[in-house]
Image 1 (cartoon, rainbow, N blue to C red):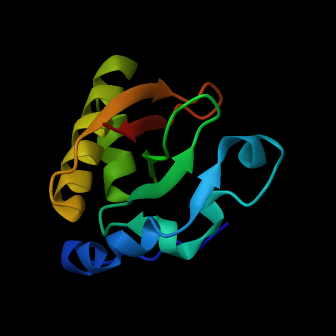
Image 2: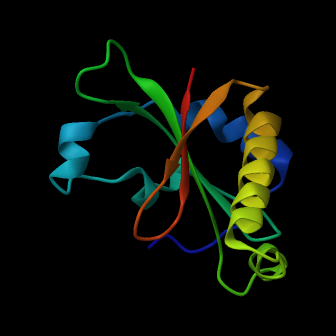
Length: 130
């Protein structure tokens, strides 16, 4: 796992295009190939504990590669603790979605993404570029 290394939004903006240089293929990812979350250029950590993983992925059956984004929190961080105060799982998820989408907008010059859903085991939200 890549150590948590927070950076400013300005620094993330300068790194954004670098995260999209490599195209990951869904078949390789499913077979255990190199994952975007293991590549420093795809990881965007924030001081409050948010981690976005941003990559370009080609999904079998689609016509072109798309941006893929996932959002999670560092355990014990300010944001993780703040989310724990939410009265329900739905509210917690809604807040994580909102914060993740805002941060992505800040560093990507408001590139549009749509929520795909949550990973079943870890409850991590995932988006794709539209």
